Length: 247
Image (cartoon, rainbow, N blue to C red; front, top):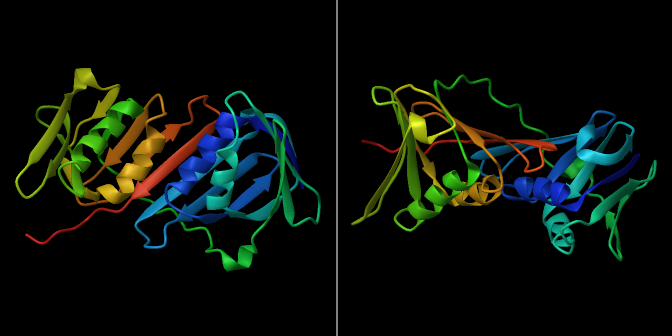
């Protein structure tokens, strides 16, 4: 059972964050809010979403696991206008989620959760390097690197306390350096990992809306990106595996 109303932009951004990596997921609903954790089909990237009750205008729910077609949901929410209030309603025992906003009323059949991959167990890794910067700054750097290559290196130089993003193509090269005074926060460590831009591009579009993004980096380890939705109503975490290349 679920009865809730939420700002259209908040819910749309939540779905966009998940849709950057997967087309379907298990949505866990209870009296504390809505959450999901899903990994892409190639097991390269993972997304975790938490929408607490404070993200909603009204909220009432009983514990339930919902199978959601994220791709379809993204298309539906694309019809919403800024300022719309979205109503979510799932009657007890029903297999259809009702969505209402503006003049639209949708009835969406839920997926069988048994056909959807189980939630992954997030790895317990401690990453020594950390930088916190504006979401649009991170997104812009990812876009710039995509012009040059299909992969990007993220790293921190401990001695100079500098965060850098670097991409190399067959003939071209780009490097962005940001010192401690140019970012929100920095935990200096000698770290560097290489990542696929195919994943980071989609994640970057979502992170561009965030006021700040915390990126945790290691040496040839996955990177963790942590941020809140623009209105602070939701919490997102991405985990992206590195590309390991032979010397």
